[in-house]
Image (cartoon, rainbow, N blue to C red):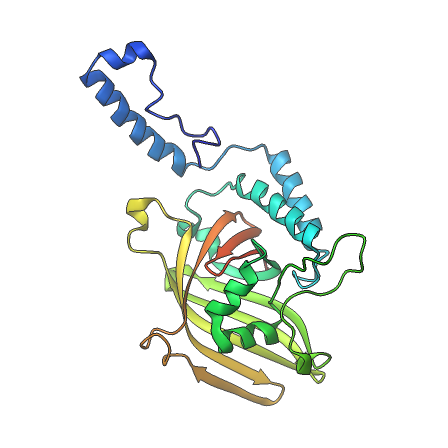
Length: 278
């Protein structure tokens, strides 16, 4: 990918007269590979003004989607394209290993990367995961029948019994990478009563990340769900009965990271945008 973007010179692109010198060529190839590895660890160079303008464009687009729940097909495609442009401008090398990844984040947008991603997400989540997704208001899908000229309608899986009953107020994620802890929290009103659902878990970098250079990924294992319904609770539901005591497992790749903004891609086909809370 980096070669396609022109960021890493290929050691194989040698001029014909360079191929005659045996050991020198082999040394050149070795140097080229080492140079490629080093170059790929460096973030692309973009001007501050270009990066700032692209961030503003992304924030404008995702701000019109009610955190991804009100989204047309063309909107989804446009947002994904602009997110990919911003990902290519990522200023932070090794995001998963950066101290910037820790902190309190507010979710601005969650969307699928393909039309099939939502179905795949539902399949991987299972019944319990899908219901948590629904209650917290974080589901999102592409409606192929909707275009810009038609009325915009909320998308995603909808449980009719919850319509008008649960009002999602926000989704948040707190990461303490040094401690290996993560919390996903949804705040909502149910019958007008302030409530929240917290999913507690562990996070860690893959063991081979230093060798493979895969320092965008965090593994995640969810350990418990804590539910607070107004004055009732907290009610804690352990998840240790899933996956032989490990709990639900997943991965998230941080593809863009700076002091205030984060873009991530989940293993279930979703892409999300979050901003840092004070």
